[in-house]
Length: 309
Image (cartoon, rainbow, N blue to C red; front, side):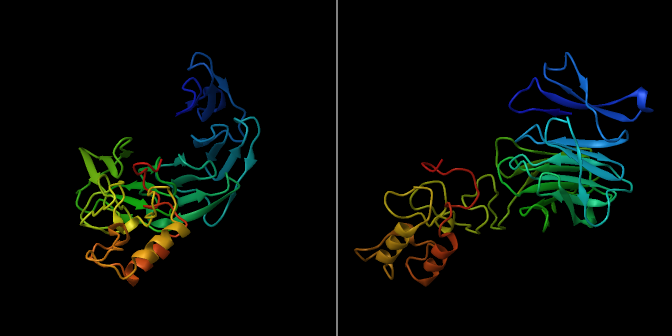
């Protein structure tokens, strides 16, 4: 079932339909379920579907050996091109759309994990290790590109739409995982359900500070030093030109670093915000950090800093 996040009265649901031999049909309601319309779909043997939370008019449909997409609430359908192995085989059949990008959706089953990056026109394989072990897929609702996959005994995280993966549950001792849920409030916390409910505390940069409290999620900074108090650690915050927190690292910040270059705390031109590695000196190492973050938001893709909304 899919509930439109912008209109809770709008839902899609699969139901078993005796008129087509018990195969699932796809139905839509615009009044909270009081009245349903069965959509005309290109295949009777529907195994799963996914609608985009960003644009609920985009609906992906999977039958046993093909994929389809509708860009108009199921009124018309176009067959998708499936690269590599077709989505056939055994195991669970799962499909879910990105919560941040209407062009992206994921599906898993006997053919492994595949992804579309072009609103269902084509599907490409991502990782065969998850076939047929995938139990659940959850795209992150805060971080574009991040997705979690639950296999029977592990939780995997990708920050690049499934190109690369890391096991984030190595100490959780999971058995027979059936579902995962991303904490809607606390960043970097995922719950996994097997016979128990496990809390998976993520640490993406492996600095012994969990993502839920880390002020630089992708840059290791165990000291969490934040000289300007804006919510981003110095290690990932090259936004230093006064007034600080204008949400972009640009030429003004380069000029501020130049002014403080080679300074130490005893010098009149000392600027603690320019000491990105907190070693008591502004030097070539800090220049490298400035280059890394130039023309980007401070902190990368993590949340919002104070004054940087």
